[in-house]
Length: 339
Image (tube, rainbow, N blue to C red; front, side, top):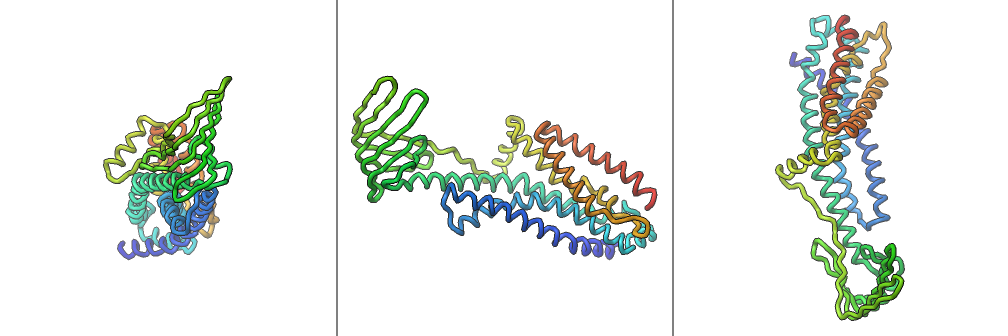
């Protein structure tokens, strides 16, 4: 049995790694294209590009691992069937259930790994990505250039005539609201960042409110704040628990949690489907395992995503129950009578 288990794992590895590396590469390219598109919003160098990509790795693994594990298992069994090895193994009294017991620990380990990635690494990486983006966007507020139109400071449009060592001269700010236009003119200004907000400190100027009439205010000092979005960091187990407790409050978090659990459990829930697709007699039957595995994977992901979005946490009872019942039905009538 030990030799058979090693043999199965060896054949599985030879199938798994090419599929996984191919899917990982394709998915990485998609994420890199998305990251590259951010350069129209913020300026990043090559090292920052790599940093942003590293925050995407947990998501890439989350989408590629379960697909690779399931399809590789189905293709491994079908390969052994095509070479008549599973038929020989069955003739020695090892039915599909006993083969299933040999590969079950591998699928269980992959499910545990996926749960760790989806419930721990992805939230952490996502908040680090958001924090990075907020930092870069706040830094962009400091890049106000002299004599250029169309620059923004929060909700204000800003024009600066001259800049020297962080001191802006002859500043004009404009903000348009529904029934009011506001102009602010100042001789000097500096920008200050205290971590939670950016402030534009204006000195010696005028503020004009234009509605049906014009109101003017002369000032010696004015501070205009631009509040930054609060940053949430996940640095401990308690932070993770607090984050996932939001499933009872926010439907979007409940959808994310349900979908994460369902996708992570996909290889384990689909083990009987893999047996069904892998076991066939090459003398009388054709090998449709690749097409079936891809179709079944697509169906599961579409159902899981749609149901999670529609029903939230209840999906964790609905989808696994239906999936297991259907797989047991197929195994009982299509596989068990022959093997």
